[in-house]
Image (cartoon, rainbow, N blue to C red; front, side):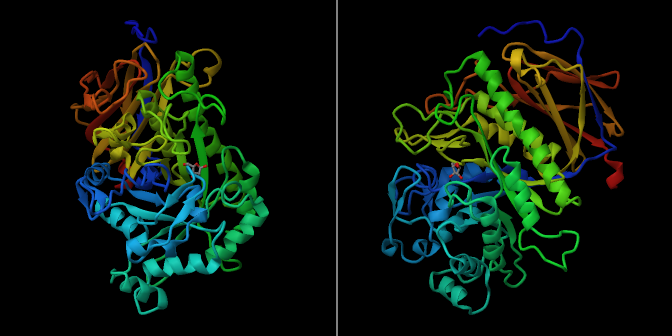
Length: 522
Ligand code: AHR
């Protein structure tokens, strides 16, 4: 594709950021990840075992640990996904050689040897500095099993489960806040209807108890896509939230799953062999997350106007047709610049809805779906995908105050996708630094912007990074690890108090400016 040298608009697109009118805090947990026993995510991706020739830390692949640590992953969801509702945690503790095997019926029908279990997962979280988020088994497990798992992990004294944990080599309890009460129980997690699940969830959640000062944050299985009826049934069943003493709810949040593809579930579209129309269609589909968050939020507001119940988007991302020749059920797909821009559209939506959305998890961490890392089986190379770099460039938004950005005169995408702007912007402030993230979705034209920073005082030095690539479907591979990599960006400067930026076609830019702002927060 050739790039047109004319910018998108004759006059620069105007943006206004009022840094004295902060929005909500964007939790770092909006940038969470998800690792399921699926394909080569856990085995080969994260876990190679202590006897592996691959460099490892007690069985955890060392380069993967280091790459995830650098990403400041705030939380990691495990063991599924659909796998969670057929996982029996007691099979994954104790001597590894003695652990029973099971069939992973959802993902490739492979035999799972349970060598990666509770202790290994929590060691991984400690190694990468992430908070664990465990999904319990409501679909095929018992209330007692779920209750005892939480006790095993978090209890201090000599209770039956803490004694068992100690016998397995872990003296101190772990901290575990985030706990899922099943997964996709409207589908792979038991094919339940909403009312049945909602009652089950109240029951199971009751027995996921606080031990000592470790308080669980219980996340119910919420809807997929636009299933507002599921959300409504759950919210009703949560009880009267304005009167906690009347009917205290054992649930704190509900989840939402939303995947992006350009076709349908049978033929989702190719990961790298796509047309310009499919480039735009992908962003149009990705941006539907914004509408879903608005509408599910409206339903929740009716029952919970104070927004006490969180919305947790614990599965999102691009889902393409599997790489030809890859093993069925392993959900292997390539990751291009398009995926990175799909990711940043999600970040923008999460920040815009940060008053309700408390957590989000991309699917999945290594070698599966929109992975941030790939381990190449032939060369052993670790590949940081374009999506990895999208995450790394958005670290400054973690736990920062959101500043809404008003974009004026922004051009829209072509044809049937004209509801969506070609240029996107979001901003936040933390520790005396304003971070502005800009995205130009145009396949072939640059965009010029002038940004008016109001309500603060800013240094006129701008530090910039850009993520772009020679082609809209560029990838990183074992042979070319750095085709899509953040590079220094210097096409932003102050002129007459306005920040002018030239944003190249198909790019994402991070600008950082030191300043005094957000005076309402002191
Ligand atoms: O992420 C892959 C699968 O997608 C998960 O196991 C399931 O929850 C969802 O349908």
